[in-house]
Length: 256
Image 1 (cartoon, rainbow, N blue to C red):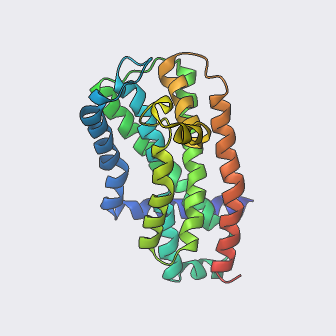
Image 2 (cartoon, rainbow, N blue to C red):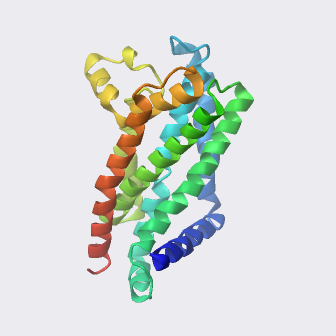
């Protein structure tokens, strides 16, 4: 266990150091989500009705953050696939290190980048007029849910990165898989405004449940009901499914 923790920290540090040498990836965590936020607020905000919310930005910001957190795992998919193709995974296997540390370190580094993107988006939101209505405990609880949900999707993208043939394929397939889930949810518009078939799907969509939990904790100032527990349960279920699948695929991809 001590070796696993130590090796995981080393791999995490290695992945974070690599980000400083790839500024384009840093832009994906900072500038791109800010562009999404500003475009939706000032281009579409006037045309979208959000009953119960005084301003569209109050409705939108939790949804934008949840979407961005889910897409944060792209770096894991791209990095694992690149390491696999370059033979670096086989090199790691030849070293005296805990085998799960490669995946654990990769997904752990996403927690740092996800936290960065949350602070950047929140800072932008506060500048344009977003305000918290929850207590300090509720605000901190929202941060915890976001990081847990992002960590869960890191395992989804870890599996994807080990399955596909190239980083380009990982980027395309990940976008195709996750992008519709974020839009067929309550992230950008009220679920009630959708056609009945999409509304049914949106109501059970984990993105809707997590976004609703964030709005209850940060914006509504009302009891969150089952949405917070639902967000935690969905995150744990995703981890329980995709983490073992990713570890199993990693062992086969790395040679057994």
